[in-house]
Amino acid sequence: MSKADVPISEAPYFNGFRPSEYTAAMIHVLEEDCVGVRLDRVMDVGVGAGIFLAALARLGAKELHGVDINPEAVMASTTLLSYVAPDCKISVREGDMWVGVATDQRFDVIVANLPHFPSAVTVGDGRPQSWSGAGSELLLRYLDGLPNYLSDSGVAYMTLSDIVGAQNIFSRIEKLNLEFEIVFTWTAAETQERMRSLKDNWVREEVSSLRSYGGYHFLHSRILKIKKTTKLSQ
Image 1 (cartoon, rainbow, N blue to C red):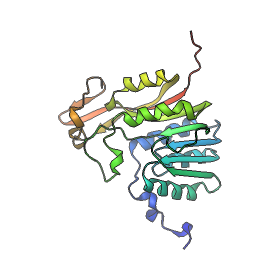
Image 2: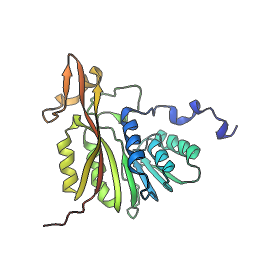
Image 3: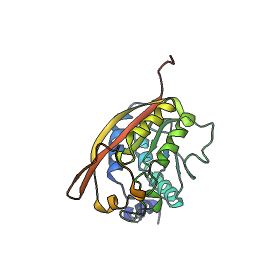
Image 4: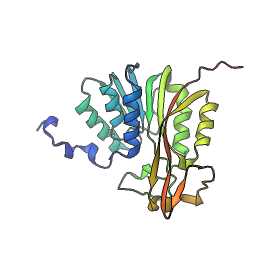
């Protein structure tokens, strides 16, 4: 049986890598924002099932690069991309964030939907353990690498839940001589299970968007678009 004959429900990217509302929001932004832009080489950090690279391939990307610490994600994304983007150059490697990405590589678009809900336990619907508990750590590591890997005219995108305190992230972006804009905002619902799992009595004073109504919790989530700064130093 050829891969084209394999029932899509049995493909490995369906095992543990189900899209979330963050995935859907990022797809919406990429499809709106990346039409007609240069997409010679694109990268997804924390590639998961490879959905963002698949979307960028449909928009014209030629080289699809991805990295993920989970070997199952490498297999899943490679399989998905071989189905939907067989004419693209595909390079997905196992690695921790930027580790293993050649220092001389520059990308026209870099995307990241990284786990950052500060949970003390793995919560949710059977997703990999690496998807919980990180807090802002992975977001900051992603940002720290952007100046080294983003082309001068390139753009980067990232998802951001207000649960980690957006101002801290905004400040790091500016310190790295990058600039950002919020290109999409929505109100996300957080379950009681997830809110109870917050580790170390996570301080949420700066999370001004958090609203709770009798055990129901809502807060802002965003997609950030990041570029190298064009401002002249004073």
